[in-house]
Length: 94
Image 1 (tube, rainbow, N blue to C red):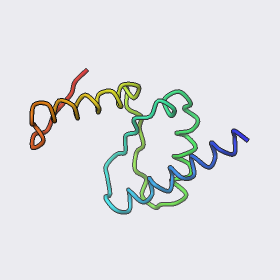
Image 2 (cartoon, rainbow, N blue to C red; image 1 turned 45 degrees about the vertical axis):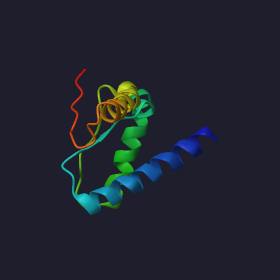
Image 3 (tube, one colour; image 1 turned 90 degrees about the vertical axis):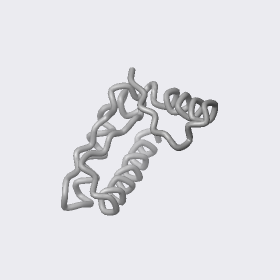
Image 4 (cartoon, one colour; image 1 turned 135 degrees about the vertical axis):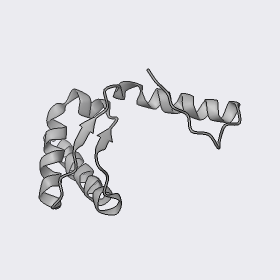
């Protein structure tokens, strides 16, 4: 049951990656996912499934600090709103 759910997850992510690659032609796709960071076989499966969908291979990587991604995004949103910085880019560094 769990294997089937994870297989469906990687298939769906591979389809999304394929659509992003076809639409935007990125140089690299970086995931900020604690799940992918912890279960590295999922990223391998996504890479395998993505390579069978597309001709061009776009590198797929995991962010080093994925466990902080949601927190940093929330902080950025709060800071932008609090200081009225909606028109400015914020660059957060750890």
